[in-house]
Image (cartoon, rainbow, N blue to C red; front, top):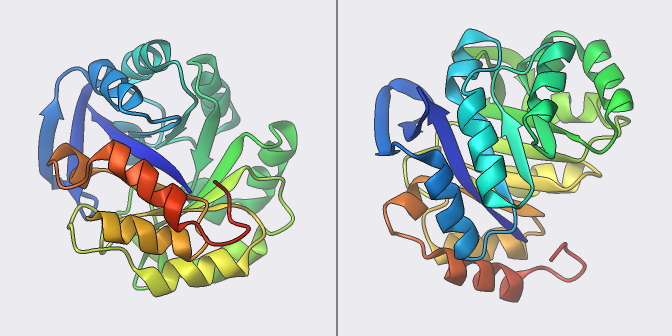
Length: 246
């Protein structure tokens, strides 16, 4: 199971939110590129970047920070947040990211998203953020009537790279992942599923790996020293379910 340290960007700084609430922000570092280098030095082979300003404003922001991270890290980076037009995807790819994450637009205009997947096969990740099982959009500011599983099944024919499933109620709360929801999603779709939200301990990492998740995004627990990245990588490798990605 791939461990992806999260670097959330707001105003050019590395921050974390609680449950996606912009009013509950903690600034961890003013130099996101230095943070990226630290995670790579500790063994990270991929990074998960989120443009929080972009998610809120509906268009890419923090381009300078993203470019600096990509240049410094030297490993594949995936970027989400505010990517809702074809030109947005092109801009993000021009910054050097390997994959982009599309969420809100997939719900609002699935035909468009399917076309983008066809244009960029294997480079688009579907980001499904859910609260109580229902899809949340617009930077988590709106909750729809569509269930996360229903949205995933609607997209099953798309040539996606992966699916990131985030449980908003757990994100940034250090309360542990929603294991049943993650397992259900991993079993429901054919793409690799990456878990996000609430990962707090090495035991959480091991359980997600045992459930067959392809990846795990870790944020606040890394920044607060609750999880040691090299140990998390080792735990994921030891605990992976038979036949699961390693």
